[in-house]
Amino acid sequence: MIAAAWICLLAPLGATLVITLAGMRISGRTAGWIATASTLVSFAAAIIAFAKLLSENAEDRTHLSTAWTWLGTDQYQFGLSILLDPLSVFMMLVVSGVGSLIVAYSIGYMDGENEERRYFAYMAFFVFSMLMLVQAGNLLLLLVGWGLVGLSSYLLIGFHQERPSAIAAAKKAFIMNAVGDATMALALFLLILHTGSLDFGSLTAISTSSSLVINLVALGLLGGAVTKSAQVPLHTWLPDAMEGPTPVSALIHAATMVTAGVYLIARTHNVFELAPNILDLAAGLGAVTLLIAGLIALVQTDIKRVIAYSTMSQIGYMFVGVGVGAYSDGMYHLLTHAFFKALLFLAAGLLIHALAGEQDMRKMGGMRVLMPRTYWLFFVGGLALVGIPPFAGFFSKDPILASALAHGTFGAILWVAGVVGTFLTGLYTFRMLFMVFWGEPSAYAREHHHVGPGRWSREGPLVMFVPVVVLGVLSVVGGWIQVADFWTPVSNFLEVSAPPLVTASGTQEAISSIFAVAFGLVGIGVAWAIYGARRAEVPSAPQLQSALEHKLWFDWLYDRAFYRPSVWLARALYRWFEQPVILGSLREIAAGAKESGSLVARLQTGLLRVYALALAGGLAVLVVVFISVR
Image (cartoon, rainbow, N blue to C red; front, side, top):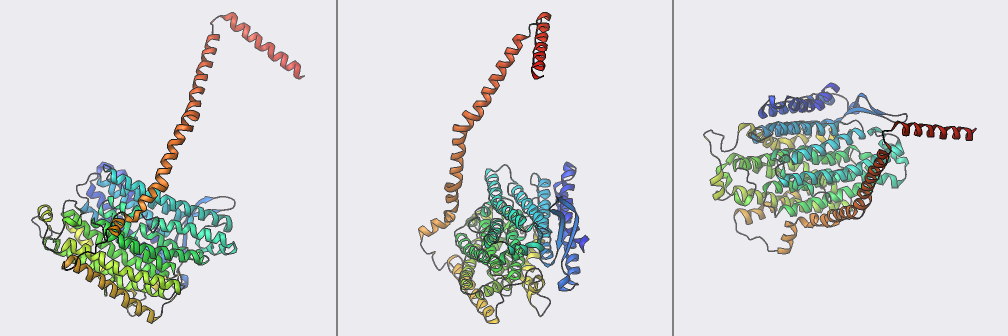
């Protein structure tokens, strides 16, 4: 079992090294198959570890394996360790399973692109980095994985190096995530100072510290989680990350990077439970994010950006879940979200691939005539996203709402926000679907949609289409693994690692399901009236629309609050300090050294009697010094 866990971790790293060292000796397609094979090996190893873990008693499902002592001092020892427990195995299955489908899809999507080998090396390294994060046996190693995921996302978002917008988006993602990395690092410093350890099993030792220290540690961890999972107010990097290739967007948004914050809160729940106000803050930020992202998605015209904002919204639901202490519910929504969000992104990739790279929904229209199979797969993903039964999202989102309702007065507020969010989800999701697929094919779609001789050429290569079909099936049946009458629910499996703080009653679950489904259907109905049947007009609210189109001015605010003052300060320091003091002093030192060298050079006369006189004079001085000392 432990060997399987190490294989799961190291297989993608091995693929990265093979592709890198092979260089030009292999083709881009070969590199794609190597990366895909490595992630499939990881998935197979994760299944083996899961099966072994499931066969053990619940209380014995925690295993720590240390390869060697990575860092050590007289006081502290940090091992290169991996932790195998229900929570880590759950994430291993999601990351490697969905990741392998996305990497396989990339073989067709990236075919013919420049630098394919580099792309697949980055993809394999991304999967390794995420597996490092979720398998880390201590917080220090988790921080290493955390940073490597940030580096990998930077490389993949900026893959198209010839596009300034891609480079800007990559730098923005890297810098904003560095803010979260810093708050996490500060939290770890406090943990070291007050507990002397970064092992997960020692987190409860912080309870002996003051409430201020506990809250600061929890706040630092929350800062990292909020940034990596793109929650308000550190969310602005995520929509810009759409500059990367579509499979990159699917990997970042569905199964890996943005879910890391949810995993971190569940993994370190012992700390957050000692700081209940910070836990409530996490839930509150999730509720605010799901509403803000849902509103902004209503005015987006780029299909990938609509799906990106839906990711922010769904991660908000996960934050509500873990924030109220329903850790298993939040993690289960993470699983189903990986299915239907990867499905939507990859189905959108089929459209973009078929339309020569076009992402503007206003140019697509009528695509169900040209790509009927993609339409039905997208339709399934949309229903799962809204949470309509019997699709996967229904089984994972509604328990979060029920747990929020059981959380008291604050939970009731979260519940209202979540129900309103289902209306927004139905509205923006089916606005996208009706704009893209319904009606007659647009002139642009008819002109640019490629039609080949093969049966599947209208939908895309089989290597792209098959992963989308698999994800479509998972989006339909993925919710049923939570039904206790069939097998052990996911929640029971995960409770070993993170026992829940709140349990919803049957009445609360029924109320939540009724309202969530009803509001989701109302959102779909409004979208149909406006964009499908075109029987209603969009309500006129120019000021609100302008605010949403400008993403509620978050980027504008950060530009004026942080970027411009930083640029002004840098330029002022350069002009008034660096140039006159640093550079000026260097010039003076250089001039002085040159002048001193000239003086010494003039003493070099070449006459032997002058040198003899200098030696005699020096010797005389030394004699006088020694006599004086004595």
